[in-house]
Image (cartoon, rainbow over all chains, first blue to last red; front, side):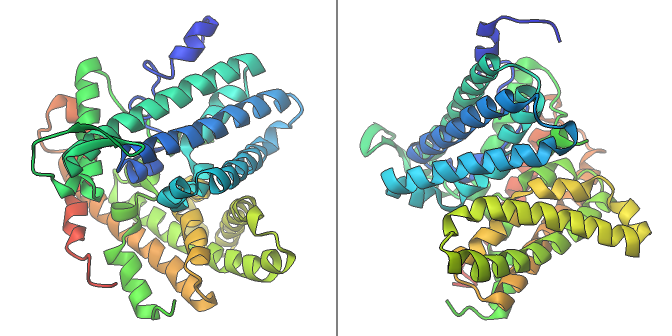
Length: 212
Length: 193
C-alpha cells in the first residue's frame, strides 16, 4: 500500500472504505438497531467509542504482542472496552441502553472493530490508528443513521430526534420497514444503488476478512 | 419465566429465528451461503458450538460469577469461554471424526466471531433460563441458523443461473432474497407469546 496522508486516513472511512456499504462489515447490529434515528446514533456512538479506544490501545501494544496470540489479545482488549461502554450507557443513558438491549454487548463480535484491529491498528502507529478509528466511526454512524432515517420515515411516517419531530410525512406508514424484512430489503436496495453508482463488485464479506 | 422446552425450541427455530428476525449471525449467513454443502457444514458446526457454549456459559455465570459478584465481567468471560469452546470442539472433531473436520475446514474457527453464540449466552442470562432451558435454547438457535442458511444457499445456487441486473449481482440480491424469506417467517409471529 502506498503512503497516504493523515487526511486520507480520516476521510477514507467515510466514503472510499465505508465500513457498511463498501467493506460490508458489522451488519448484524446495523440492521437490528436501525429502527429509529435515536437508536442509530446511540449505537454509532457506542461503536465509535469502542473502536477508537481499542484501536489506540492495540496500536500502542502492537510491538509487544507475539504474533501468534494477537487475535485472543485483540478480543480481550475489545471486550474490556465494550464492558466499559456498556456500564457507562447503563449509568448515564438507561433508556437508550434498554432500547439497544443485547446489541450493546454484541459490539464485541462486531466485525468492524476486529477487522480494523487486524487490518489497521496492528500494523500502524497510534496517531494513524486514531484517525482511522475516528473516520471509520463517523462512516459507520452516518451509514447506520441513513438506514434508520429511511426506515423510520417510511415505517412510522415521521422522523424524530430526541423527542423532537423533524419531519412528518403525509403517508400511511408502512409497518414492514420497522420490522425485520424492511431492513433487509432496504439494505439490498441501498447496496444495489451504491454498486450501480460506483460500478464495483462487492465480493468481500464480513467475516471473510478475518480468515487466516 | 417458565417457558416450556418445546416452546423454546419452536420459538427459536421459527418464530424468533435468529437470523431473520434478530439479525444475529448475518456475516456467515451471507458469506457461507453460496453452496448448499458448506452451508450445511456451517450449520452443524454452529449448532454444536452454540449448544456447548450455552451450557458452559450458564454454569460459569451461575456458579462462579454470581457468587463472586462479578456479573459485570460477563462479556469478557463469555467471549473467552466461547473461544475456548470452539478450540475444544475443533480438537474433539479432529480426533474423533477427521472426515467431518475436513468438511468443516475454515468455518470452525470463524464461529468465534459469530454473534449467535454470544447472543444465545447473553439471552439465557437475560431471560433467567435454567440449565436445561439454556441448553435447549442453544440447540434451537443453532438449528434455526441451519434452517435459514440452508434455505438461503438453495436459493442462491439457483440465483447464479438467473439473469440478475448487474448492480444487484452478489450481495444486494442476497439481501433482497433474505428480506422475502424474513417476510415469510413473519407468518410464524404470534404463534408463541
